[in-house]
Length: 147
Image 1 (cartoon, rainbow, N blue to C red):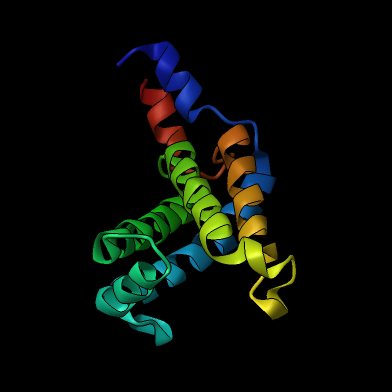
Image 2 (cartoon, one colour):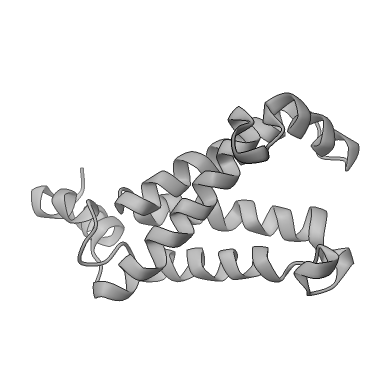
C-alpha cells in the first residue's frame, strides 16, 4: 500500500480530544444500529425498520435498513476502537446527512419535535473525526507504524 496513502488515512494529531469524541459517539451509533439490525434496545429490527423506511420513500426499505443499521453499528464499533476511524466517520457522517434530510429537516431544529439537532450533532462530530483522525489512543496508530 502506498505509504503516503497510509499516512493520510491513519495519521492523527487528535490527542485526547479524538478519544473523547470517538467513544461516546461510537457507542451511541452502535446502539442505534443494533436497534435497526437486531431489534435490540427497543428497536424494530430489519423488518420493522425496513417497512418504516419504505413508508417514507427510502426504498427498498429492507436494504436501506441494512445499510443504515450496518453503517451505524459497525461504524460505531470502529469509532470506539479507533479502527479505520476516517472511513468509519465518513460513512457515519453520510448516514446522518441522509437522516437529517429524509426524516428530520421538516420538523425544525429541536429534538422535542423530532427535529434534526441530534442528527446534526452526530454529523458534526463524525465530520470532526474525518478531519482529525482517531487520535493518540486509536488502533489506527498500529497501521501507521507498519505503513
